[in-house]
Image 1: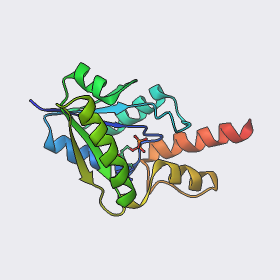
Image 2: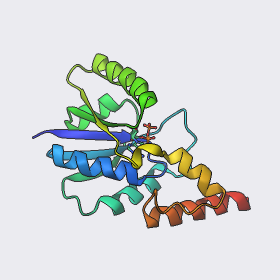
Image 3: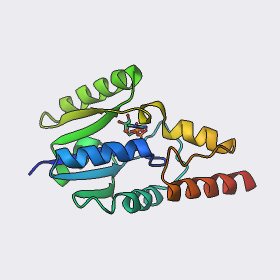
Image 4: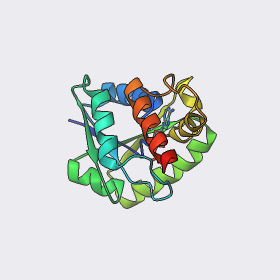
Length: 163
Ligand code: ADP
């Protein structure tokens, strides 16, 4: 049985992430979506909020689990018995970034194989950060994130602007 881990910050989960999760769930026996802390990003949602939001969106996918994870992705993968690390590639910039991380992860643990899935249009054109930017300016973001996530995002942005 092959277990794969799809790690990310998911702040918040987007329709692009969900497309990758669905596609990866067909490639592997068991897929764990790992909500990680990206130390270079300031999150809008807590890890447990993100886990709950993703769980609600993947409830129909029987081989997908969602977990919070801290520390090195390769250490988390050893703990859960995963050998494949799934990432998405949207563009050339993602490629450079993912190539370096994939090299480092394999250097840290030679059993880890990174599998990059090419993001499909229109998902390839947006990120959680860009969605947060346009949401702050009042744009309708339901094209980019599930409705329940859009509601939580708007509530959080309102809470922030109120103080
Ligand atoms: P991280 O901080 O680890 O990059 P993200 O949540 O931003 O976390 O992204 C997690 C993974 O999902 C990355 O591999 C990224 O390339 C991919 N990804 C992000 N947004 C999209 C999208 N819109 N479509 C497809 N893949 C995406």
